[in-house]
Length: 447
Ligand SMILES: [Zn+2]
Image (cartoon, rainbow, N blue to C red):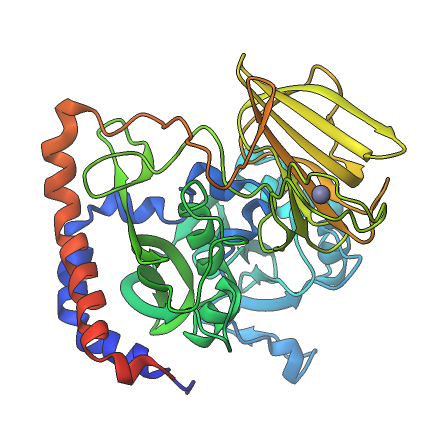
């Protein structure tokens, strides 16, 4: 058994409430836990965010005795673990099956196309009937999805079987301290996965600069989905509600799927959390030099205004477009190194300097979406080390991206506000009670 952090035990105490919450979410919404990713989440790290930990529990008879197939009622199953360099054809060959049998399976089309993407470590189980004839296969893609191919008379049929994970709502609270000064450290200390910490940083990316604005004493409280199969945790789902106290200011977010099926995070009053620009174009970095009109330049050793923000980050860290727009410039010069200028409508311009490389498809005239990777942190041009120099201009004038007022996205539609309130208030009440409980027990959580 794993060691549960103390917060987890507290979560267990609230299990009953959690179950009520789960029931409050409709089955279709639970289903979406597998596929629905808030828009911004899908961006820099791809779908690794929501990858379900796969841990096949199928017994591999070959591991015990390669020559002893496992006898079931009247069929014989033999399990093969995919090795590096394997493809379906080599696997069929190892199983003693013919190219014709492979062809019969693959001719099932779309349903079995996943079989051409088998990964080392995955398992394919081949079945033979009592006469020794190939009668089907099973391929477990992850803990939740298995492809079954079965012989029916003279042909094969393919079928995906889906196990719905049990979704429990868990909660955690964490605090920014001198020992845990970053979101990652604080999250780690609270036992949160990287996936959840990353989701949190994306939920509040329009309001809070996690590179600039974190302070000791900042706190966050989360309610999030944990997925279980056969009592075993298979991964985290989505954050369903979150509160972040940043520099004594409270920010709250709640997940809401509107009647069109669009899922987004909103403030409790229905305002969208999304804005036209995100605060930091680099996630998980720290600011090495802020907006400062009277800075002594590190290379030129004289006062040169610093009209941007420097984000120190490892070379290769993705740099994100702060907002939707059009690339005006993507080229290289002596001072700026590889740099990108994005025009966002008439008024706004953002600049990204010292890149190691441009992302694919980034060139003058290219359209970009907010959060899209446009390049990678580097140290080209006049630069003392890997960092992103970021500038934000309004009407051609440099502004501090940390403090500039940003245009806001659409709130929940007026006609839907009652539904929004009805569906989100239980979760928000839960969040408030969690946050309140823990603040009362402040001594307890300061570990
Ligand atoms: Zn700079």
